[in-house]
Image (cartoon, rainbow, N blue to C red):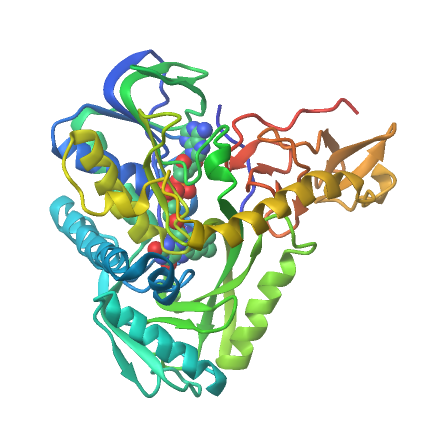
Length: 504
Ligand SMILES: Cc1cc2nc3c(=O)[nH]c(=O)nc-3n(C[C@H](O)[C@H](O)[C@H](O)COP(=O)(O)OP(=O)(O)OC[C@H]3O[C@@H](n4cnc5c(N)ncnc54)[C@H](O)[C@@H]3O)c2cc1C
């Protein structure tokens, strides 16, 4: 089943052509089946294939359809969402240094892949700057500088970031990089498909039987494999022990044309949520990417205001000529700050990789190496840090409790919320609303022609109620980040079944 959806266009989707790999149309047997053709699935595939394993990759849509084609393409050794100071506090020096090493090495691994496969994906080494814009942020920045040094990540404390507005102290990180993330994953896809021609697009995985041999089920064929890797950003299906430890977050990006001269670099401020910036270009010249305005998925009433917030930020800080791109995507914050990578006790032959926060381009890359090494039986010092079944009560207790209180509150509260419209006539064209019909809540979307599509608002993952996202014209579940397009087809997150249709 191909997923039908309207979505915002990222600069990366604008500048790259969609790939066209075939659909799976038979039953096949391989060593490893990988679900999802984003940076995680494809990095894992390339490491395994280079070591001689037979690997098949199945993708519900097309290569890079997920967040790998909708991010900002910063490659950094810094941790921005969960900072080194928190990781150091919760996990100690040794693990923090392993985390730092993963971040640094992942950029090198991406650069090595680009060379090995001869990819043209705009990769460029540039410095990064985490800066304090307000004087009262300097103390926290200095704390972060000390923690970054303790992580053995090369950095320097300088007086200002090279930006056209006033900043106070900044942490300078040498040898960071920027690239075109979609062209990179497409390059990886071409390289792995060149080997066994086992990359399948428009092939939605609807179930996995796991045992000694696993069977990955789609509507048009099956893949039997010794091991399965879920490169799906968050595990698909029911994984309560993991999904209750992840918080789904939406983040927003605009592409801005400015008159200012900006030094080529990666930039992050110390705001909460923070802004992230870098340069790129399209056929009309240089462009500044600005991201931020993060919020928990499904909890913002009017998501379009997030783009407005970024536009206002751009006008406050730069001499803006035009704003040419708007897009948004989803990330997953783990409760203790570190991704979950590897097999779980419940499914020892299925490997997951999730919780990358906003550093999943490096995260998906080292996850690929960790998982490939585990499958090949090669020792990997990083594996223990990211084990999905790690228990770290100090780090995760507070987040675990607050996240699950949130889930329960949505499960109950969203059912009791008043409906947003009384009748179909009240719904404006191009919008979705929750309304009451014959005493029951329904999710109603009125398309541009005035036709109303009715669906159950119950997320097919774990039964929470979805909310309308007007920026992306999607139905988003606040509990575990399941997302459906306007007419109820799965786009993102753990669900594998569409919203149930209701006859009008
Ligand atoms: C706005 C934003 C900006 C970001 N910027 C950066 C950045 O600058 N630097 C950085 O390091 N990280 C960044 N990140 C994070 C990073 O982009 C992600 O963590 C990373 O791309 C995740 O890659 P992935 O391969 O795990 O998942 P994805 O790229 O989402 O790939 C998962 C794939 O699985 C497929 N799939 C899902 N379900 C099924 C199914 N049932 N059957 C078959 N296929 C399925 C999907 O279609 C998708 O193609 C950003 C995130 C956001 C939201």
